[in-house]
Image (cartoon, rainbow, N blue to C red; front, side):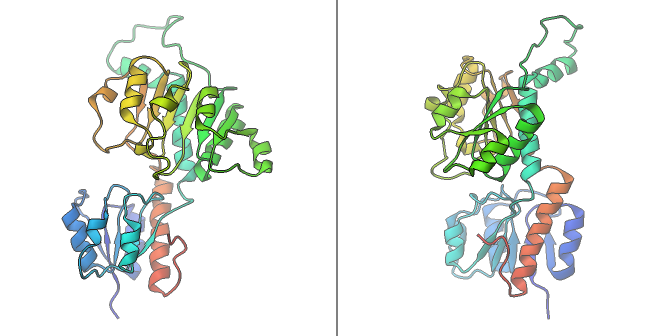
Length: 322
């Protein structure tokens, strides 16, 4: 009996690629290029399974062919807003993702951005590399302390809770959070967390605001001129969730005018394209979508996809079926 044919759209950790080849006939993207819409549409007609990542756009139009061979899309990532889920399901395609395994890595990166912003580390490194540092003096690149400050978390799911734990137990931060509903009281007590029913209330009271919400019609553009105007001039914004949660033009305006102290971004509205105005700002830390970029996490993500494929082709329910 022939093995199911599987396309992996980008290169994964080598150990995962080797593990996939045991049970499947795997086609790898050898030069690791971003596949076009035509390539992805063709793949749906030729492979039993397609394994995209979060940068592979799979809109409704991709599923319009009269014949589609693919029976499962094993998404390499927890977010799936790049896939037209309903269109895929209408063709009888199962879609899975990789929850749980990137929680700590993403929360760690959000902490990295917060610390870099507070201590102006990005500015300092740029100054040093440019040969512009001329020695220590008392007022050089004075930042702000993190310990004991207030952290507002927008989206108290797995990653938001991990961020709260690291901030509260590691830095003694007061936790405020905005979510669709409160977390259990026992968790609130453990994290010294206070529920904010309104996003504007959270943003007005936080020294740091960290976004951990999924992309959805409800969250798209939720950080805009109105909500940014609630932040204090000495407060910072951090986004490791989805780029479209923040209205970039509004953020640029507030940073240019010093209406907020700074921002740290790992995701963008039109990745990998960034507005020139963002790149020109000194009070901004920019990272190239590194949230899950640890060897341990990227390997675990791949193995999670493999587990879903194994279950599906063994006639079982994939554990991460959407």
